[in-house]
Image (cartoon, rainbow, N blue to C red; front, top):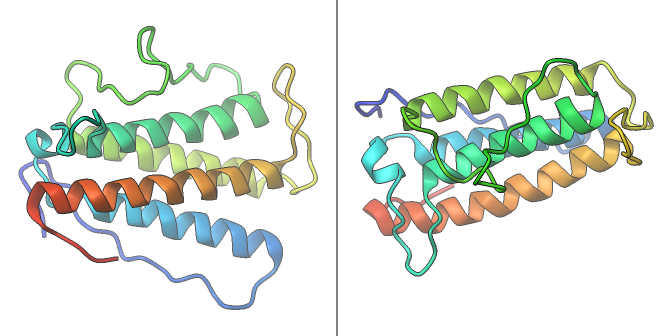
Length: 172
């Protein structure tokens, strides 16, 4: 399945039933990230940027963009304090849900996947017991990963509802 924007489904890899803590949690997060992309695959940018469940203003593309922002904020900025990483939030969009001029569904998905890859690099380079390096931050990497599992899982549920309202598509 593809659309004019070129977003295609990813092959989701079900995490193993038994794994070390870090592997289990990171693989679950990756599974949810793949689910996010699959939920928007096949939508046009017009479909993905239309609020389909009034009075909510959530859109599928906005949720993917928000999740990109959350990945950047928690891993690159707050946890790793990587230099020269721009803040993810727009001046008038504290949640990151609003697309910037010129962004398409495909560009938002590409940016999201790139941010997830950077997050995984940060995770791989640290222990779960390492404490965040960002100014004023006092959480360990384990907390950040668990938080992102919760955040991504919640938004997968939102994407389920939005996708069904847009074109009737249901499924995992």
